[in-house]
Image (cartoon, rainbow, N blue to C red; front, top):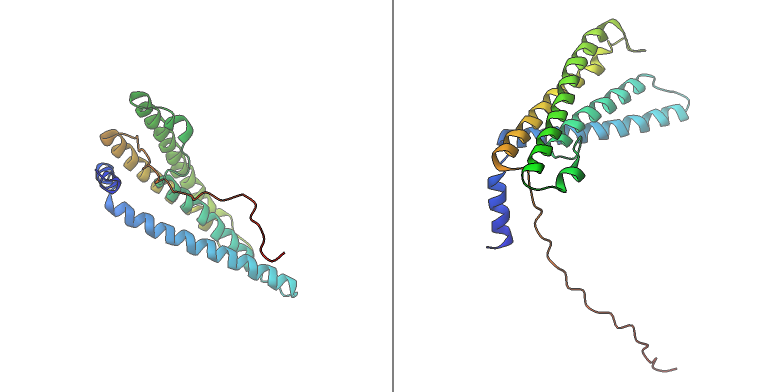
Length: 194
């Protein structure tokens, strides 16, 4: 069986929920736009301050873009197992011990997601009592992304738990093809014409 056939079978065995693939892609695009907007607003803030005409509202925009990028990025990273994931411990094990460790890790991540949802919502509600300057927008506009991030992290973690319990968490990486590197002749070559 060829390596590509094994990868297809492995992909079919560990299918993710298809609509979550599209959600992940959309969230990645949103993260890219947020990071670009953050960089652009920081640049504009520096330029306007340097020329002596600062736009004070840019600091609000910058902080909002930064906070939203962090929390949406954390949700996407959870789906990709790049964040809140203890790979060194779990990858060292196989079989039942690995299954137990993977489930415990994801239950901890699910607990963190529940805290983000609950306490993020409480901060969001309380945020209507404080306002940002100079715009006067409620601070709740910053806190709105925290429970949303918790919901997404919980959703992606539940997906991982369901797939892992059904199919196992052991995802062996495909073997890398060996590259043949030609030998380099390090002998001294006589120079012609000297």
